[in-house]
Image (tube, rainbow, N blue to C red; front, top):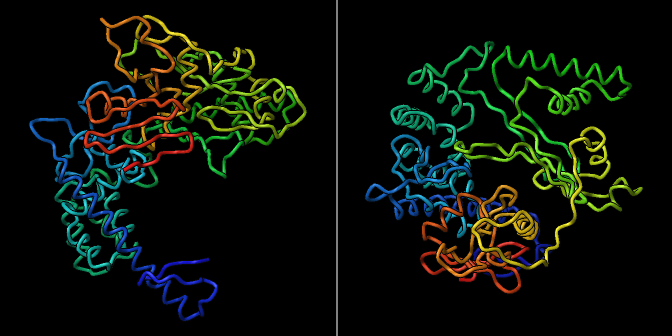
Length: 455
Protein backbone atom coordinates (compact mmCIF):
# COMPACT_ATOMS: atom_id res chain seq x y z
CA UNK A 1 0.00 0.00 0.00
CA UNK A 2 1.62 3.19 -1.22
CA UNK A 3 0.90 6.50 0.55
CA UNK A 4 2.27 10.04 0.14
CA UNK A 5 3.73 11.90 3.13
CA UNK A 6 3.65 15.63 3.89
CA UNK A 7 6.71 16.21 1.67
CA UNK A 8 4.96 14.44 -1.22
CA UNK A 9 7.32 11.50 -0.94
CA UNK A 10 5.78 8.07 -1.56
CA UNK A 11 6.26 5.36 1.04
CA UNK A 12 5.10 1.80 1.66
CA UNK A 13 2.82 1.51 4.69
CA UNK A 14 4.08 -1.98 5.52
CA UNK A 15 7.65 -0.63 5.81
CA UNK A 16 6.82 1.79 8.67
CA UNK A 17 8.10 1.14 12.16
CA UNK A 18 6.09 2.11 15.25
CA UNK A 19 7.71 5.53 15.68
CA UNK A 20 7.19 6.60 12.08
CA UNK A 21 3.62 5.30 12.05
CA UNK A 22 2.61 7.25 15.16
CA UNK A 23 4.30 10.36 13.82
CA UNK A 24 2.25 10.12 10.63
CA UNK A 25 -0.94 9.53 12.63
CA UNK A 26 -0.24 12.77 14.49
CA UNK A 27 0.36 14.60 11.20
CA UNK A 28 -2.92 13.25 9.84
CA UNK A 29 -4.76 14.60 12.88
CA UNK A 30 -3.45 18.10 12.22
CA UNK A 31 -4.27 17.83 8.54
CA UNK A 32 -7.81 16.76 9.43
CA UNK A 33 -8.23 19.81 11.68
CA UNK A 34 -6.99 22.07 8.90
CA UNK A 35 -9.28 20.42 6.35
CA UNK A 36 -12.44 21.15 8.38
CA UNK A 37 -11.21 24.68 9.10
CA UNK A 38 -10.68 25.25 5.38
CA UNK A 39 -14.12 23.82 4.63
CA UNK A 40 -15.73 26.29 7.04
CA UNK A 41 -13.70 29.20 5.68
CA UNK A 42 -14.80 28.42 2.12
CA UNK A 43 -18.42 27.93 3.19
CA UNK A 44 -18.49 31.34 4.87
CA UNK A 45 -16.91 33.03 1.89
CA UNK A 46 -19.57 31.47 -0.34
CA UNK A 47 -22.19 33.09 1.89
CA UNK A 48 -20.36 36.42 1.55
CA UNK A 49 -20.38 36.07 -2.24
CA UNK A 50 -24.11 35.31 -2.33
CA UNK A 51 -25.96 37.93 -0.26
CA UNK A 52 -29.63 38.71 -0.65
CA UNK A 53 -29.84 41.87 -2.75
CA UNK A 54 -32.64 44.15 -3.93
CA UNK A 55 -35.28 42.41 -1.87
CA UNK A 56 -34.54 39.03 -3.40
CA UNK A 57 -35.44 35.69 -1.86
CA UNK A 58 -33.27 34.07 0.81
CA UNK A 59 -32.11 30.48 1.02
CA UNK A 60 -34.11 28.53 3.58
CA UNK A 61 -34.25 25.18 5.28
CA UNK A 62 -37.66 24.42 3.86
CA UNK A 63 -37.64 21.42 1.56
CA UNK A 64 -41.38 21.00 1.15
CA UNK A 65 -41.95 19.92 -2.46
CA UNK A 66 -45.35 21.59 -2.30
CA UNK A 67 -43.78 25.06 -2.17
CA UNK A 68 -44.36 26.81 -5.46
CA UNK A 69 -43.20 30.30 -4.51
CA UNK A 70 -39.92 31.79 -3.35
CA UNK A 71 -41.40 33.10 -0.09
CA UNK A 72 -39.52 30.50 1.93
CA UNK A 73 -39.19 30.20 5.69
CA UNK A 74 -36.38 29.68 8.19
CA UNK A 75 -33.26 31.27 6.70
CA UNK A 76 -29.95 29.49 7.08
CA UNK A 77 -28.18 30.75 10.20
CA UNK A 78 -29.35 31.79 13.64
CA UNK A 79 -30.56 35.25 14.62
CA UNK A 80 -28.04 37.92 13.68
CA UNK A 81 -26.52 36.16 10.68
CA UNK A 82 -26.81 37.66 7.20
CA UNK A 83 -29.25 36.09 4.76
CA UNK A 84 -27.91 34.10 1.80
CA UNK A 85 -29.44 34.22 -1.66
CA UNK A 86 -31.95 31.55 -2.65
CA UNK A 87 -30.44 28.55 -4.48
CA UNK A 88 -26.88 29.42 -3.43
CA UNK A 89 -26.88 26.26 -1.30
CA UNK A 90 -27.77 24.06 -4.28
CA UNK A 91 -24.83 25.39 -6.26
CA UNK A 92 -22.45 24.89 -3.32
CA UNK A 93 -23.79 21.37 -2.74
CA UNK A 94 -22.99 20.27 -6.28
CA UNK A 95 -19.42 21.61 -6.12
CA UNK A 96 -18.80 20.07 -2.68
CA UNK A 97 -20.37 16.71 -3.60
CA UNK A 98 -22.92 17.12 -0.79
CA UNK A 99 -26.66 16.70 -0.55
CA UNK A 100 -28.61 19.92 -0.34
CA UNK A 101 -29.27 19.39 3.37
CA UNK A 102 -25.57 18.70 3.96
CA UNK A 103 -24.61 21.93 2.21
CA UNK A 104 -27.26 23.89 4.11
CA UNK A 105 -25.90 22.59 7.40
CA UNK A 106 -22.33 23.50 6.51
CA UNK A 107 -23.26 27.02 5.37
CA UNK A 108 -25.41 27.60 8.45
CA UNK A 109 -22.66 26.41 10.79
CA UNK A 110 -20.13 28.67 9.09
CA UNK A 111 -22.46 31.65 9.43
CA UNK A 112 -23.15 30.98 13.09
CA UNK A 113 -19.50 30.50 13.97
CA UNK A 114 -18.40 33.69 12.24
CA UNK A 115 -21.27 35.94 13.37
CA UNK A 116 -22.68 34.44 16.59
CA UNK A 117 -19.79 32.46 18.07
CA UNK A 118 -16.66 34.41 17.03
CA UNK A 119 -14.60 33.38 20.10
CA UNK A 120 -15.26 29.72 19.41
CA UNK A 121 -14.39 30.29 15.76
CA UNK A 122 -11.08 31.85 16.84
CA UNK A 123 -10.26 28.58 18.62
CA UNK A 124 -11.03 26.67 15.43
CA UNK A 125 -8.72 29.00 13.51
CA UNK A 126 -5.94 28.22 16.02
CA UNK A 127 -6.70 24.47 15.70
CA UNK A 128 -7.40 24.36 19.44
CA UNK A 129 -11.00 23.21 18.96
CA UNK A 130 -11.82 20.72 16.20
CA UNK A 131 -14.15 22.01 13.54
CA UNK A 132 -16.57 19.11 13.93
CA UNK A 133 -17.11 20.04 17.59
CA UNK A 134 -17.58 23.72 16.76
CA UNK A 135 -20.15 22.78 14.12
CA UNK A 136 -22.07 20.73 16.66
CA UNK A 137 -22.09 23.68 19.08
CA UNK A 138 -23.33 25.96 16.28
CA UNK A 139 -26.19 23.56 15.65
CA UNK A 140 -27.11 23.28 19.33
CA UNK A 141 -27.19 27.06 19.79
CA UNK A 142 -28.93 27.99 16.53
CA UNK A 143 -32.34 28.57 18.11
CA UNK A 144 -30.92 30.90 20.77
CA UNK A 145 -31.35 34.63 20.37
CA UNK A 146 -28.35 36.63 19.22
CA UNK A 147 -27.91 37.98 22.76
CA UNK A 148 -28.02 34.48 24.27
CA UNK A 149 -25.55 33.13 21.71
CA UNK A 150 -23.12 35.98 22.44
CA UNK A 151 -23.37 35.34 26.19
CA UNK A 152 -22.80 31.62 25.67
CA UNK A 153 -19.75 32.30 23.48
CA UNK A 154 -18.29 34.71 26.02
CA UNK A 155 -18.81 32.36 28.98
CA UNK A 156 -17.33 29.40 27.13
CA UNK A 157 -14.25 31.42 26.16
CA UNK A 158 -13.79 32.76 29.69
CA UNK A 159 -13.50 29.28 31.10
CA UNK A 160 -11.06 28.12 28.40
CA UNK A 161 -12.68 24.67 28.58
CA UNK A 162 -14.36 23.13 25.55
CA UNK A 163 -15.27 19.65 26.72
CA UNK A 164 -18.85 18.46 26.28
CA UNK A 165 -19.75 18.72 29.99
CA UNK A 166 -18.74 22.39 29.96
CA UNK A 167 -20.53 23.05 26.68
CA UNK A 168 -23.75 21.43 27.91
CA UNK A 169 -23.63 23.21 31.28
CA UNK A 170 -23.02 26.61 29.68
CA UNK A 171 -25.79 26.01 27.15
CA UNK A 172 -28.20 25.13 29.96
CA UNK A 173 -27.24 28.37 31.75
CA UNK A 174 -27.83 30.38 28.57
CA UNK A 175 -31.27 28.85 28.13
CA UNK A 176 -32.17 29.51 31.77
CA UNK A 177 -30.97 33.12 31.58
CA UNK A 178 -32.38 34.16 28.21
CA UNK A 179 -35.05 31.59 27.32
CA UNK A 180 -36.75 30.44 30.53
CA UNK A 181 -39.80 29.56 28.46
CA UNK A 182 -37.81 26.65 27.05
CA UNK A 183 -37.18 25.11 30.45
CA UNK A 184 -39.57 22.33 31.26
CA UNK A 185 -40.22 19.97 34.08
CA UNK A 186 -38.41 16.90 32.77
CA UNK A 187 -40.92 14.69 34.55
CA UNK A 188 -43.87 16.45 32.94
CA UNK A 189 -45.22 16.44 29.39
CA UNK A 190 -43.34 17.95 26.48
CA UNK A 191 -44.78 21.12 25.01
CA UNK A 192 -46.91 21.30 21.91
CA UNK A 193 -43.91 22.73 20.06
CA UNK A 194 -42.40 19.23 20.16
CA UNK A 195 -45.38 17.47 18.59
CA UNK A 196 -44.41 15.62 15.45
CA UNK A 197 -44.70 12.30 13.63
CA UNK A 198 -41.65 11.10 11.72
CA UNK A 199 -41.28 7.97 9.60
CA UNK A 200 -37.77 6.68 8.86
CA UNK A 201 -37.02 3.99 6.29
CA UNK A 202 -33.63 2.40 6.85
CA UNK A 203 -31.88 1.64 3.58
CA UNK A 204 -28.41 1.07 5.03
CA UNK A 205 -26.85 -2.20 6.17
CA UNK A 206 -28.84 -2.15 9.41
CA UNK A 207 -32.15 -2.03 7.56
CA UNK A 208 -31.48 -3.54 4.16
CA UNK A 209 -34.22 -5.85 2.91
CA UNK A 210 -35.85 -6.07 6.33
CA UNK A 211 -39.07 -4.31 5.38
CA UNK A 212 -38.78 -2.55 8.74
CA UNK A 213 -39.08 1.18 9.41
CA UNK A 214 -39.31 3.44 12.48
CA UNK A 215 -42.28 5.64 13.41
CA UNK A 216 -41.63 8.26 16.13
CA UNK A 217 -44.54 10.19 17.60
CA UNK A 218 -44.63 13.06 20.09
CA UNK A 219 -48.12 14.38 20.76
CA UNK A 220 -50.89 15.00 23.23
CA UNK A 221 -50.71 12.61 26.18
CA UNK A 222 -54.42 11.76 26.09
CA UNK A 223 -54.46 11.24 22.33
CA UNK A 224 -51.44 8.94 22.41
CA UNK A 225 -52.68 7.04 25.46
CA UNK A 226 -56.00 6.34 23.76
CA UNK A 227 -54.27 5.30 20.55
CA UNK A 228 -51.90 3.02 22.45
CA UNK A 229 -54.88 1.38 24.14
CA UNK A 230 -56.38 0.77 20.72
CA UNK A 231 -53.10 -0.74 19.49
CA UNK A 232 -52.97 -3.07 22.49
CA UNK A 233 -56.58 -4.12 21.91
CA UNK A 234 -55.81 -4.94 18.29
CA UNK A 235 -52.68 -6.86 19.32
CA UNK A 236 -54.81 -8.93 21.73
CA UNK A 237 -57.25 -9.72 18.92
CA UNK A 238 -54.33 -11.02 16.85
CA UNK A 239 -53.24 -13.25 19.75
CA UNK A 240 -56.72 -14.69 20.15
CA UNK A 241 -56.81 -15.36 16.42
CA UNK A 242 -53.72 -17.53 16.79
CA UNK A 243 -50.88 -15.08 16.08
CA UNK A 244 -47.84 -16.48 17.90
CA UNK A 245 -45.65 -13.40 17.56
CA UNK A 246 -44.47 -11.46 20.62
CA UNK A 247 -46.58 -8.66 22.07
CA UNK A 248 -44.29 -6.03 20.59
CA UNK A 249 -44.50 -7.60 17.14
CA UNK A 250 -48.27 -7.89 17.35
CA UNK A 251 -48.55 -4.23 18.43
CA UNK A 252 -46.50 -3.22 15.40
CA UNK A 253 -48.72 -5.28 13.08
CA UNK A 254 -51.79 -3.80 14.76
CA UNK A 255 -50.93 -0.42 13.26
CA UNK A 256 -51.51 -1.85 9.79
CA UNK A 257 -54.83 -3.36 10.82
CA UNK A 258 -55.99 -0.06 12.33
CA UNK A 259 -54.91 1.89 9.25
CA UNK A 260 -56.95 -0.42 7.06
CA UNK A 261 -60.09 -0.73 9.14
CA UNK A 262 -60.41 2.22 11.55
CA UNK A 263 -63.08 4.62 10.32
CA UNK A 264 -62.51 7.25 12.99
CA UNK A 265 -58.87 7.85 12.08
CA UNK A 266 -58.23 9.92 8.97
CA UNK A 267 -55.05 8.85 7.21
CA UNK A 268 -55.67 11.08 4.20
CA UNK A 269 -57.21 8.25 2.21
CA UNK A 270 -55.73 5.04 0.92
CA UNK A 271 -54.90 4.60 -2.71
CA UNK A 272 -54.66 1.01 -3.73
CA UNK A 273 -51.50 -0.92 -3.23
CA UNK A 274 -50.22 -0.78 -6.78
CA UNK A 275 -48.61 -4.08 -7.49
CA UNK A 276 -46.56 -3.88 -10.78
CA UNK A 277 -45.73 -7.46 -10.76
CA UNK A 278 -45.65 -5.24 -7.71
CA UNK A 279 -47.15 -3.69 -4.54
CA UNK A 280 -46.84 -0.02 -3.49
CA UNK A 281 -47.46 2.13 -0.52
CA UNK A 282 -45.38 5.36 -0.20
CA UNK A 283 -46.36 8.38 1.85
CA UNK A 284 -46.21 11.48 -0.33
CA UNK A 285 -45.88 15.17 0.39
CA UNK A 286 -48.69 17.34 -0.91
CA UNK A 287 -49.40 20.95 -1.61
CA UNK A 288 -51.36 22.64 1.17
CA UNK A 289 -53.49 24.13 -1.58
CA UNK A 290 -54.35 20.76 -3.10
CA UNK A 291 -58.04 20.00 -3.30
CA UNK A 292 -57.40 16.27 -2.87
CA UNK A 293 -54.63 14.27 -1.26
CA UNK A 294 -53.13 11.35 -3.11
CA UNK A 295 -52.85 9.48 0.17
CA UNK A 296 -50.71 6.57 1.18
CA UNK A 297 -49.10 4.66 -1.69
CA UNK A 298 -46.27 2.16 -1.99
CA UNK A 299 -44.91 0.75 -5.25
CA UNK A 300 -43.24 -2.62 -4.89
CA UNK A 301 -41.66 -4.07 -7.99
CA UNK A 302 -41.08 -7.80 -8.26
CA UNK A 303 -41.60 -10.67 -10.67
CA UNK A 304 -44.28 -13.32 -10.38
CA UNK A 305 -41.52 -15.95 -10.28
CA UNK A 306 -40.02 -14.34 -7.19
CA UNK A 307 -43.39 -13.58 -5.61
CA UNK A 308 -44.81 -17.08 -5.92
CA UNK A 309 -41.53 -19.01 -5.98
CA UNK A 310 -39.83 -20.91 -3.20
CA UNK A 311 -36.89 -18.57 -2.56
CA UNK A 312 -37.79 -16.56 0.56
CA UNK A 313 -34.53 -14.63 0.24
CA UNK A 314 -35.54 -13.15 -3.11
CA UNK A 315 -35.72 -9.36 -3.08
CA UNK A 316 -38.41 -6.92 -4.19
CA UNK A 317 -37.89 -3.21 -4.79
CA UNK A 318 -40.22 -1.26 -2.49
CA UNK A 319 -39.48 2.17 -3.91
CA UNK A 320 -38.91 4.65 -1.03
CA UNK A 321 -39.16 1.86 1.54
CA UNK A 322 -36.06 0.25 0.06
CA UNK A 323 -35.49 -3.41 -0.80
CA UNK A 324 -37.58 -5.97 1.05
CA UNK A 325 -37.54 -9.73 1.20
CA UNK A 326 -40.27 -11.46 -0.78
CA UNK A 327 -41.12 -13.19 2.50
CA UNK A 328 -42.01 -9.78 3.98
CA UNK A 329 -43.87 -8.80 0.81
CA UNK A 330 -45.94 -11.98 1.02
CA UNK A 331 -46.90 -11.06 4.59
CA UNK A 332 -47.97 -7.59 3.41
CA UNK A 333 -50.18 -9.14 0.75
CA UNK A 334 -51.76 -11.53 3.22
CA UNK A 335 -52.68 -8.67 5.55
CA UNK A 336 -53.42 -5.94 2.99
CA UNK A 337 -54.14 -7.85 -0.19
CA UNK A 338 -57.68 -6.52 -0.38
CA UNK A 339 -56.31 -3.11 -1.35
CA UNK A 340 -53.58 -4.40 -3.67
CA UNK A 341 -53.75 -4.36 -7.46
CA UNK A 342 -51.54 -5.93 -10.10
CA UNK A 343 -50.58 -3.89 -13.15
CA UNK A 344 -48.45 -4.76 -16.17
CA UNK A 345 -44.73 -4.04 -16.19
CA UNK A 346 -43.95 -0.69 -17.78
CA UNK A 347 -42.13 -0.93 -21.12
CA UNK A 348 -39.18 1.44 -20.65
CA UNK A 349 -38.56 1.47 -24.42
CA UNK A 350 -42.05 2.63 -25.36
CA UNK A 351 -42.10 5.77 -27.47
CA UNK A 352 -44.84 8.25 -28.19
CA UNK A 353 -45.92 11.80 -27.56
CA UNK A 354 -48.99 13.76 -26.55
CA UNK A 355 -50.18 17.23 -27.46
CA UNK A 356 -50.56 18.50 -23.90
CA UNK A 357 -48.38 19.62 -21.02
CA UNK A 358 -49.14 16.86 -18.50
CA UNK A 359 -48.03 13.36 -19.52
CA UNK A 360 -50.47 10.44 -19.44
CA UNK A 361 -50.14 7.92 -16.62
CA UNK A 362 -48.14 5.42 -18.65
CA UNK A 363 -45.61 8.04 -19.69
CA UNK A 364 -45.23 9.50 -16.18
CA UNK A 365 -44.65 6.03 -14.75
CA UNK A 366 -42.19 5.17 -17.51
CA UNK A 367 -40.08 8.26 -16.76
CA UNK A 368 -40.10 7.57 -13.01
CA UNK A 369 -39.10 3.95 -13.59
CA UNK A 370 -36.33 5.00 -15.98
CA UNK A 371 -34.99 7.58 -13.50
CA UNK A 372 -35.70 6.44 -9.92
CA UNK A 373 -34.49 9.70 -8.34
CA UNK A 374 -34.20 13.41 -9.10
CA UNK A 375 -31.67 13.86 -11.92
CA UNK A 376 -30.07 17.02 -10.49
CA UNK A 377 -26.37 16.54 -9.63
CA UNK A 378 -25.88 14.54 -6.39
CA UNK A 379 -29.61 14.58 -5.56
CA UNK A 380 -31.02 11.31 -4.23
CA UNK A 381 -34.66 12.24 -3.62
CA UNK A 382 -37.05 9.64 -5.00
CA UNK A 383 -38.71 10.39 -8.32
CA UNK A 384 -41.95 8.97 -6.91
CA UNK A 385 -43.02 12.42 -5.71
CA UNK A 386 -40.86 14.54 -8.02
CA UNK A 387 -42.08 16.99 -10.64
CA UNK A 388 -41.82 15.81 -14.24
CA UNK A 389 -39.94 18.63 -15.93
CA UNK A 390 -39.90 19.39 -19.64
CA UNK A 391 -36.19 19.49 -20.45
CA UNK A 392 -36.98 21.74 -23.39
CA UNK A 393 -39.56 24.08 -21.92
CA UNK A 394 -43.14 23.45 -22.97
CA UNK A 395 -44.53 26.13 -25.27
CA UNK A 396 -48.31 26.53 -25.27
CA UNK A 397 -48.09 27.98 -28.80
CA UNK A 398 -45.44 25.54 -29.96
CA UNK A 399 -45.59 22.47 -32.20
CA UNK A 400 -47.52 19.30 -31.27
CA UNK A 401 -45.86 16.35 -29.54
CA UNK A 402 -43.72 18.32 -27.08
CA UNK A 403 -44.48 15.93 -24.20
CA UNK A 404 -42.47 12.76 -24.75
CA UNK A 405 -40.48 10.45 -22.45
CA UNK A 406 -37.26 11.80 -24.00
CA UNK A 407 -38.22 15.38 -23.09
CA UNK A 408 -39.25 14.60 -19.51
CA UNK A 409 -37.10 14.14 -16.41
CA UNK A 410 -37.93 13.94 -12.70
CA UNK A 411 -36.78 16.89 -10.58
CA UNK A 412 -37.59 17.36 -6.91
CA UNK A 413 -39.45 20.61 -6.30
CA UNK A 414 -36.39 22.44 -4.93
CA UNK A 415 -34.21 21.63 -7.95
CA UNK A 416 -37.09 22.23 -10.34
CA UNK A 417 -37.34 25.76 -8.94
CA UNK A 418 -33.57 26.22 -9.26
CA UNK A 419 -33.75 25.25 -12.92
CA UNK A 420 -36.87 27.31 -13.60
CA UNK A 421 -35.31 30.46 -12.15
CA UNK A 422 -32.41 30.31 -14.56
CA UNK A 423 -29.46 29.22 -12.42
CA UNK A 424 -29.18 25.86 -14.18
CA UNK A 425 -29.90 24.29 -17.54
CA UNK A 426 -29.57 20.69 -18.68
CA UNK A 427 -30.05 18.24 -21.50
CA UNK A 428 -30.53 14.49 -21.80
CA UNK A 429 -27.77 12.75 -23.72
CA UNK A 430 -28.28 9.92 -26.20
CA UNK A 431 -27.09 7.35 -23.67
CA UNK A 432 -29.64 8.51 -21.08
CA UNK A 433 -27.34 10.64 -18.92
CA UNK A 434 -27.99 14.27 -17.98
CA UNK A 435 -25.57 17.09 -18.73
CA UNK A 436 -26.06 20.03 -16.34
CA UNK A 437 -24.57 23.51 -16.69
CA UNK A 438 -24.72 26.21 -14.02
CA UNK A 439 -24.97 29.93 -14.71
CA UNK A 440 -21.17 30.20 -14.56
CA UNK A 441 -20.70 27.64 -17.30
CA UNK A 442 -19.46 24.77 -15.12
CA UNK A 443 -20.78 21.35 -16.10
CA UNK A 444 -21.66 18.07 -14.42
CA UNK A 445 -22.76 14.75 -15.90
CA UNK A 446 -25.39 12.78 -13.96
CA UNK A 447 -25.15 9.07 -14.72
CA UNK A 448 -26.67 5.93 -13.25
CA UNK A 449 -23.43 5.51 -11.29
CA UNK A 450 -23.40 9.02 -9.82
CA UNK A 451 -22.41 12.59 -10.67
CA UNK A 452 -19.18 13.45 -12.49
CA UNK A 453 -17.73 16.97 -12.51
CA UNK A 454 -16.45 17.85 -15.98
CA UNK A 455 -14.55 21.07 -15.17
